[in-house]
Image (cartoon, rainbow, N blue to C red; front, side, top):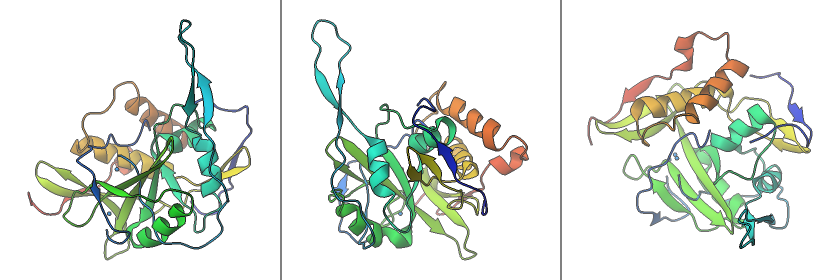
Length: 267
């Protein structure tokens, strides 16, 4: 929603979408830096320019809980990665578990397994290049619901996993995501404010997320299509309820459900 002020959290505020989608991990295939579409594995990027923060994010060390054999192991520092991404223009938008933690908790915990980002498909080349400069160079296709039009790309840098999902637009300019069902590929509509939610500031890091309405509609669409398996009871449903209660309590329940359109009838 345009005109809203950024939300600011201090370091002491907060606690930890499990990922909006539990991505079906088909066998990854290598792809060139050009090509095509959107949900789980490693990540996508594009050819880029713009301001970038120099230097890699350092993983922290955490002591294992075992009293008999304590040892240090690396902890992915996704807040540090978000700090690096904040220097990229135009902004990158998070969704999934990290976005929910940012919006609901004002904190990014150590428990996240990856960082999910959404971009318009037309920005793929730009983003590949920008992210390559941050060390995310080898991008693979993780999910391709339509031939030649991947939905999700992935890449890693050390302990950090980045996933890039691609949003498409219809002739009227309305955004949507495509997933595959037993009946064929379907389009899950997204609201016009997909990329219009004001940023949240945590520890002086400007973090852009999809709008709460987009997050709710996306999870509802994934659940309705069962494209990535069943919901995780006690996690996905809880986060969905928290988003609705915090941001969308007075919305018509019908507006919280996306339109799902069959595209190719089994092909």
